[in-house]
Structures are given as structure tokens and as C-alpha cells.
Image 1 (cartoon, rainbow, N blue to C red):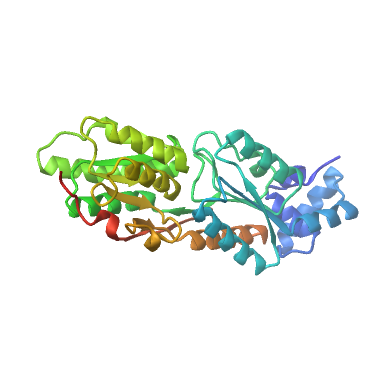
Image 2: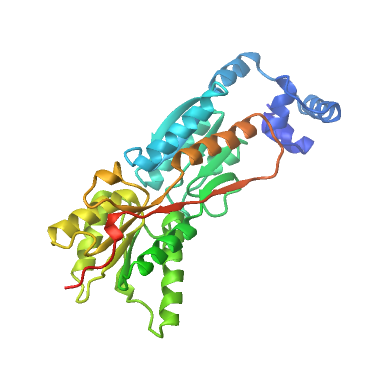
Length: 338
């Protein structure tokens, strides 16, 4: 028996277009006639009961993120939900814990349940596979992280700019041995923030006639509290520890700060700058300098793009990039020597 995908291929249109033809959506008369003619030739007949079930499922979208415990993703999820409510869409939340296998299972569930669409912050730039949805014509929007080679809409942060701004600030405050606690290698957000750090530091060292910064000044964590603590402990054990550290996400910053306090080197003696705010940063002593992220706006914009695709827009794929900004506080007020 022919499926909607068979009709779409034969008629040279998208599955969404075929769906609109048989569900009363807006399609040109010429295109609708071609789809109906192709459907008749293939013996395709929409099942009314199945269609009713699909319509119920089509009111649900999936949001697949690494960790709702991270305040960044909490705010992002709220942005998605607020935007979805405007068109009566419900949101199903899935946490991957940065686990590609777990993520794949959620993608298969979203496909099997015929969700209207999915917003995903990918667990891996190289290993995340969206084919379970894309091959079925299910709309997908990547948010914060985009898998390499995925032909989907995306809403991203300008991560490299944020890394550059952070490193420039630390240099301007007088810090010179600047390290970076990056996230997992191969994660787009981590790689881009690290690239910004390296670009600024290399330019500064070139101007002052110095060599490349020590390779051991870059440590990779897991975007979690304990990963940040372990990375900071490795940096503090170096023969010449850094005098400032740029941490590539907020949860690792919490762990890094704990390690600095345990070692008696709490900021600003060792400068500490976070990519993304920790909860209530002004109440932390000393208050933490951070790269501020438009988390809510990311989620709201991603849901908006998804709603357009669900409605059947034929626009070219879009990538929306939102800028970060730096909020200077006491943790980077300048190095304390000795």
C-alpha cells in the first residue's frame, strides 16, 4: 500500500505538502491537482481514523536537551513552552544527559509517536543522527547545538564571540596566565567557545612576542559541576598555575569555584569567568563575572521556527544567531600577586 512518502516522491513535493492537500491546508490548485492525480495512480487513500489520531499527536512537540538541571536549559525550555502555547502546542521534555544512545532512543520515540516536530540541543556534533525524523518529513529545529551535516533550521549562540569577549576582558583586567576549562571535545558549543579563547590569546601573545600558551592550560570537562572541579584541580596542580580561568559553562564554574576555595585561591586572586550565569550570581562571594546568554530567547525563537515548519512553510532553511554580552563583576577585578 502506498504511503504519503511514496506520493511525495512521485509528485516531487514534500510530505508536508501531501498532508496539506488531504487535510484542507493551503496549496495551489495546480499542485493539489498533481498530488491527487499521483495519489490516485499509486492507489493512495488516506485513512480517516489514522488521520484523526495523527491530528491529536500533531498537537505535541518534543524538546530534547542535555540537562534540565542546568539553568540555561531551564530558561530555554520556558521559552519553547511559552511560544508553543501561542499555537496550542504541548511540549514533551526529554533529558539526554549528554548520552548519544539515550538521545537516539528519544528521537525514535518522537518519530514513532508522529510528533508534530522536535527541537533538539544535540548531544554530539558528529554522532547525533536526526535521520529518524528528517527522513519522515518531521520538522526539526536545532537549538544551541547543531549536528554536523544536518539539514534543519537552527537557532544558535555566537559562541566564538562570547569566548573572545571573555578572554579580552581577562587580559584587560591584567591577567596573563589565562586557562580555559572547555566542555566535551566535539560538542559544537565547547569547540566554538574554545576557538574564541584561543584566537584572542594567540593574537595577544603574538603582539607581545611571546610563544603559544601552554597546552596544559586547556582542560576539558563534562559541562557538569564535578567536571569543573576536577579540571580546576588539574590546573592548580601545574608547576605554574593560571592566574585566571575562563570556564565554558555555568555548572562547571560552580565546581571550579569550589576547587579554588579549597585551595585558598578564590577570586579575584585567581580570576574566574563563566560562560553563562550561575543562579543568583550577585549573591555568590565574590560575585561572578559571566558571559550573559539569551537562553529564553533561544527557546522562543526555536519554537517559532518549528511552528512555521509545522504550518507548512516552504522557506529555505534558516539559521538564527543570537549575540551574547559580558557582565563584569568582582571575580575578575584583577590579579592578586603573591
